[in-house]
Length: 279
Image 1 (cartoon, rainbow, N blue to C red):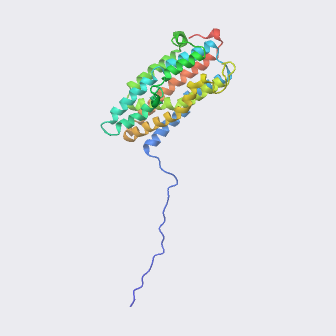
Image 2 (tube, rainbow, N blue to C red):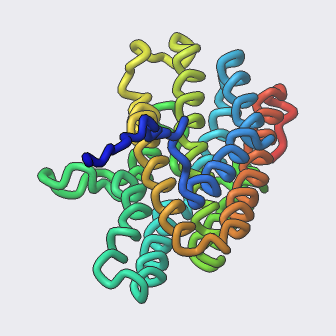
Image 3 (tube, helix red, strand yellow):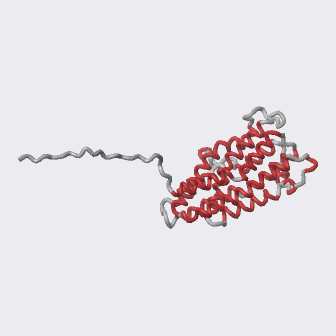
């Protein structure tokens, strides 16, 4: 007797996820980035940009702007180097042959700062030197950049915080501070560029791409890449140390709090008649 064989008509269903689940480290990173973007400090920066578009900076306001910005930037290049080294050392026991790559994600932000962006041509002018040239083109001499009367107190505070967080705070806090610095930079330099371009005649610009604006142009080009590399550095660190998410958030918050006061102060001061400006 032949044996009958029954074939099942049941079909196997394959379910595809509606979206790709983010790794926990990416979710933690996104939470910090969202806080940076929505922080009152970001709105203070945008308010400053609006003021620059509305009002031409007179000589006193230009001195205030460039001198305070120079003080703010003072510790950035060396701070990035310090953090890149600290992060490399931190990774070394866990990734013997990958630690340098982890540090490079931070170091990448310093390439332009140190004039190493065109290695075939050798060392080029640093961004500090480029900034000095730009200030001079707007009529602000180096002696005026160093004038204590033209530097706001919060600019000095920002420089001190930069030195502290890049060099001495826990790695997680340092990475959060750096992340906030890089994610705000693209917005900051774009707003400054647009503010100067809005008053081309008053600033004696030959046009929207006048070489006097080169310092701001170059930053609008490189800062998105620096922001991306800083995100990678934070994501990788949180992959290994998810317990440090609070530190990363605290570092970003420390930057944004002072950053917001820096630009709120500049907005208030450049809005004042020249005779009322007091450093």
